[in-house]
Every structure is written in C-alpha cells, then in structure tokens.
Length: 178
Image (cartoon, rainbow, N blue to C red; front, side, top):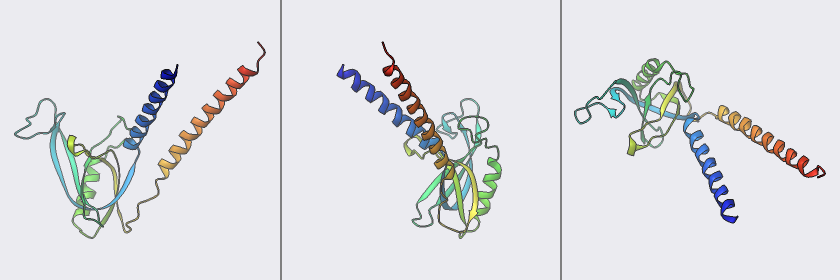
C-alpha cells in the first residue's frame, strides 16, 4: 500500500513539474536589449539548409534577430516566426514587420528595444526563443508581467475552487448515515 502512495506522489510531482516547464516555455517574457543585427536563413524540419544539411522537403525563411544585453554585453539570438493559428496561441502574423522594426533599431547603437518573447534558447538543439513583439524603449527596466500574474491568479482560483468542491463533496459523503 505504501508503494502505491509513493507512486501517486511521484506521478503528481511529474505532472506538476511538466506543467511548470510547459508554462515557463509558452508564457511571455520580456528583455531589454540592443539589437545588433538581423538575418534571414532558409530552414527545413532538420534546421538551417546549407551544404552539410541539404533541403529535404518543404523549406521556409526564418528571421533571426541578434541582440546584446545593455549591461553585460552578453549576446543572444532570437528567432522571429509567425505562430499563425497554431499553438502557442499568440496569433502572430507580422514577423516581416517585426523584422523591419528590429533592423531599424539595429542602425542606432544607443537605441534600446523591449522584446516580448516565449521559448528557450537551447544551444545543444539549436532552438531559439521566438519574438512576438519588439518596441523602442528608453528605460532598462523590464515591465511587470501583468498577463502572467493574472494567468496564475485565475489558474490558482480554479484549482482552489476544484479543491474546495471536492473537499465539500467528500465531507457530505462522510456525514451521510449508512
């Protein structure tokens, strides 16, 4: 009986960690950066198309935006792709416009840009976070993530309501005469 409890705890912990990682990936984040350059590369499902990796199947253009942190000068690369109607539901259809704004920001080395993005940079797998919006800013302060706060308040409220409803239901069962 003890091993069933432990297995249940492990399964619940796995589900909670998976949900937390998934939310960390898809919820928006912000960075204040200097845009240092932009580029376009031809990619397929295997990655960038080049001499070592010839195209196998349909290809598409992927925009990249090169940035540097204004304080540490640490470089970071973002991809700039439309999400379209697919998951995650950012309904982004303006990657060319975002690329043009980034290119404009790259011409002025003193211009700071506020980037909203989702995703992770995993160098081992050559994955890049995807920019959803870019705008000029004059401050190095990142904005308060209001959407994320509201999202977690709503999710926490739903979880609390389900917990309380389940608890009340189980209490009613225990109170019933047999």
